[in-house]
Image 1 (tube, rainbow, N blue to C red):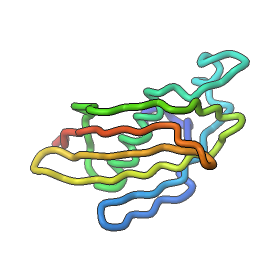
Image 2 (image 1 turned 90 degrees about the vertical axis):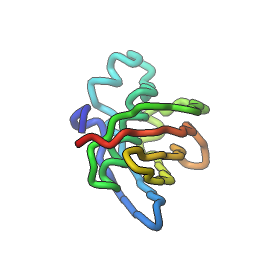
Image 3 (image 1 turned 30 degrees about the vertical axis):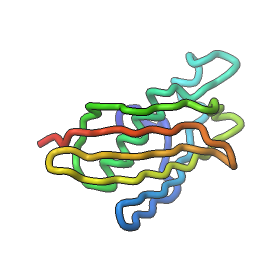
Image 4 (image 1 turned 120 degrees about the vertical axis):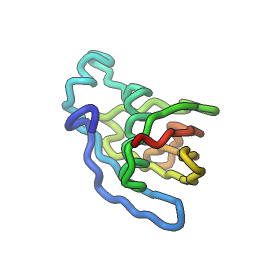
Length: 122
């Protein structure tokens, strides 16, 4: 985990290239004190890092984010109001690359849509 103690995985289910995970954010983590004081917001880069780490867990491989072809931040994730997020990954492997179509949501609200390509690190 790149940012220690930012989140914990509550559930993680894999089925035919699809991963569904429930992630609990640590609302008292230092990152939220600076982004933003009095109004904590999950940084987009941290959300993308969670996607990467969950993909690595699913494949048991180290990855490097090489291409983001489509990223849409639709709703703000406030860890004080939305402590648990749902992450869905559709993963396909191609030679030395991994393609991921992803959504992140909380309750019934879509927060992030992402299409990414990762390179597999040796």
